[in-house]
Image (cartoon, rainbow over all chains, first blue to last red):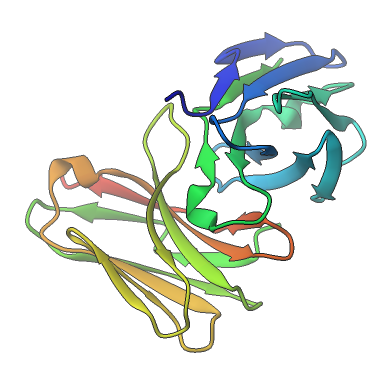
Length: 114
Length: 111
C-alpha cells in the first residue's frame, strides 16, 4: 500500500519563475494538506484541499495556490518565486474527520530558488 | 509564526542516556503529537495524546499531555544511535484539521 508520494524530489528555480509540485495521497485518504518547512524550522501549514476545494488556509500570500483533482491528488503552485520560498514542501493526506494519527506525510519536495 | 515553543533546540546524547524534551503553547489543543524527522524524509508519527493528563508509551518513548492542554513532554529512555534526528511536537485542533508544529529538537550523538 503506497503512502503519500510527492514529485519531484528536488527542484531548482530562478527568482520570478513559477513552480508546480505534485502529491498523490495515501490510498483511502481524500484530504490533502500542504506544509512549508524552512531549513531548521518546523513545518508551517499552507492550505488544505477536500472535495476539490480549498477548505483551510494558513498565513501564506496568494502567490501560493493549489488544486485537487477528482482522484484526490493535488498540486501546489507558487508564482513569482522569491529566494525565501526555498524550503522543503511537505504534502500530508488524511480523512477529513478522523483520528489525527492517520495524518500521513510524504517525503517532500526540496525547492531551491536562486 | 510558530505558536509552539519547543525546548531544547538541540541536545547531545550518549548511548544509554535518558533524554527529555518539552513543548509549550499559548493556546489549547485537543490533541498533542510527537513526530520524528530523519534527513530527506517527512515527519513520522511517534506518539499521539488525546486527553489532558494522559501518559502514553511507545517502546522506549513516553509522552504526556499536560493538564492545562497547553504543554507536553517526550522522554526517550536508554537512547541508541538511531534516536538521532529531529523531534517535533505538534498540536491538533479538530475544527481546523491541521497541525501546528514546534520548532523542533535536534538530537545529536556526543562526539
